[in-house]
Image (cartoon, rainbow, N blue to C red; front, side, top):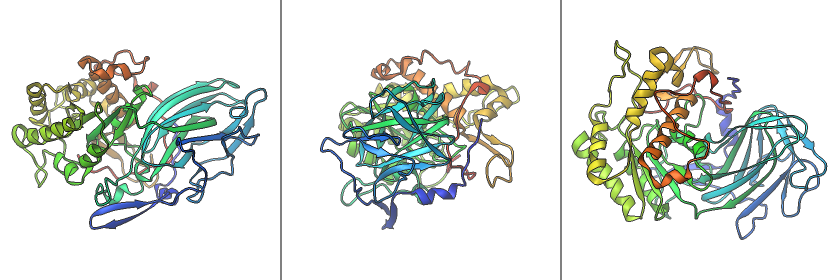
Length: 458
């Protein structure tokens, strides 16, 4: 894989908001943009240097994001304009680059339907689109020279505020995350990423899948870390939104105590879903420890009942195994009785259960002791900037491992015959974790920021 890495501290220079910590609650403040927004909450942007279509805002290679305008591009290489005759003004020209670039727009909290016109008049493209903190939206979209491909994605943009007095208690490391910067962030990556136009409209009526979990679920902001929650979006139609509230190091108790569950419940609509995966950190000693068949089940039941009050539907997800093999090449259960406790509660309460614990075991064993390293953050020294020592993490996944585990979750939806099956993309087919995709064929264009410090949790 080609690696395009910018020293991670540059994130601070692109952060569009500033944070203050007051009484343990983080509040993120934002300057209002100076461009015009329609009452219908629709934004239209015409990329390139040609004539601008009526009702669109021009985006050229000089339209860099600023807090004053509230929109613009953030380039990591040269931005080039191109033009193609014979097409309408919104799509007859555009911008491309030989490196990833972002488009950033300050918007209110909510769900957004985004229509992208992609492709280049001068050369072919293979474009990967990620949103916010590296959520995979479109994967390696191949476009011939001169062709235009129209794609629609849906993205959740969230704020930590719950009401006038309450907020999620963000950890200090979360403050620069694009998930919390009060902007919509779109990353265009891959071979010759080229954009002709972007149209964005509020879509709060769409159903939502809320994710509650830890580092194995969260949107990991930096390479080379990844989790299944940020790959999950790739396999769903743009008719349902994924709102990933998981965070590294979380437990059922801490997730509640930091108001993350309260935030989810404050925006949940009848018919929305709550996926729950916890155990890795809950099993450890300390104030957040819970026992499998008593307090662990009690906490899960609390989440389930609170979602039910809002008209939400709960789905349990058993926790992914850690990468620990015995002498015979079989996975050792390090999660003790917690997966069984979740299975038992799901059966008793008639709650759908996706057995990611069992599927991850099959996945790792299919790869083998050495091959399974390709699914985790195992890299030799000097793979990333300032990485003087090898990385060897047997809990946290890289992009390949996260991608395959997301496919496990989608397969679980199909096997459970949930209402959500209608939202699975048509090209998914079936996935057998015992016969995973070949690692050498997996393509992932790295995002511009890397961090060698491992996420919280183990």
